[in-house]
Amino acid sequence: MNGERRVEIKLGDLCNNRCPFCVSGDQRDAKAPWTPLARVKGELAAFRARGCGAVGFLGGEPTAYPWIEEAVACARSLGYARVSLCTNGTRLSDAAFCARLVAAGLTRVTVSLHSHRPEIEDGVMTRVPGNHARKVAGLGHMLAWRARGALRDGVSLNPVLNRQNLEEMNEYLLFAKGLGVADVRFNFIWPDDLLRGWRAWVPSYREAAPRIVRAIAFNERRVGLRLSFGGVPRCVLRWAGISPRLAETLADRHLDEATLDPDNDVSIPSADGGRGDRFVWQERKKSELKRRGPRCGECRRAQDCEGVWGTYAEIYGLDELAPV
Ligand code: SF4
Image 1 (cartoon, rainbow, N blue to C red):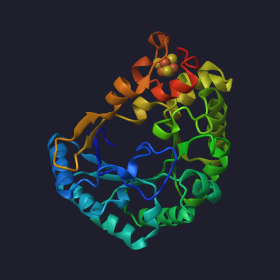
Image 2 (image 1 turned 30 degrees about the horizontal axis):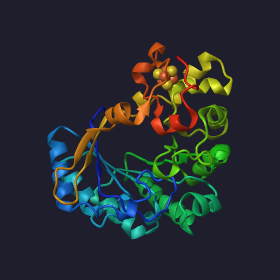
Image 3 (image 1 turned 120 degrees about the vertical axis):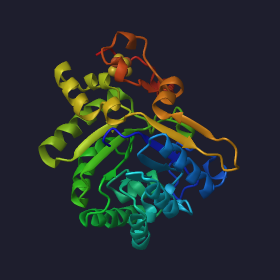
Image 4 (image 1 turned 90 degrees about the vertical axis):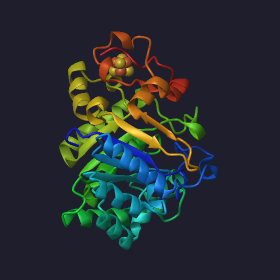
């Protein structure tokens, strides 16, 4: 990123998958239609003028946006050096579409493939038959472009870590390596909207920590990918039963949100020409969406830490958090 400020621009809520853990919620497809392209171009110009050099497009599903190629091309023409899509990957199975995105100037793509097993990906996670095969084909197209020198900022995988894939991270990492992906980030599930209180999907950190440490060790021994975890506070690694020193080392390498996720702006333009919403995502998480434990004030790493999702605390409380 070269320290360049980043903005994420939301294009709308519509999507071509049906993940039960979708943060856009159960009313997703009933929400306002897509943001008009003129509004997106206006936000691109405004944030470029503020000094942003990197942009990502958010949904819903950004590849389903009818003017996604124009939005990418506009970003590049305004001088954004890094233009990325975080996508469910379904539409990337269309090779001609991938070629048009690359020609428009896309530099990075992150694909939310949640399981190496089609029956889990299609049957439980995204609930679209044949989706796993389409995502894998799409990754193949984008990795081929990367091998030809395009997509200079990389192709990565961004699975949501939840109870359906918690026990299978090692197999997933081997699968990712087999595809030719170099970078995997598991994002701990955010129990929002539909999932609120749903333990069948949301593991506790106490349960997840030993699996996370096992996956890190397996990756170091056998796989060698760049591996990180989002939404996991560093103090919970102690639940893996490892020494405090090792926990610190692993957290520095694989968990540190402050290092891995520098502050970024978010723009949610209104579809109807209203003012829309602009905020800094990390500040909104800290002030509204995340919670600290009663002892976090004593923690050496409190400065870098966001705590846990408030909705996670509704399920499991805050007792797992203990000062580092
Ligand atoms: S600030 Fe709180 S949640 Fe974060 S690492 Fe420290 S004790 Fe854990």
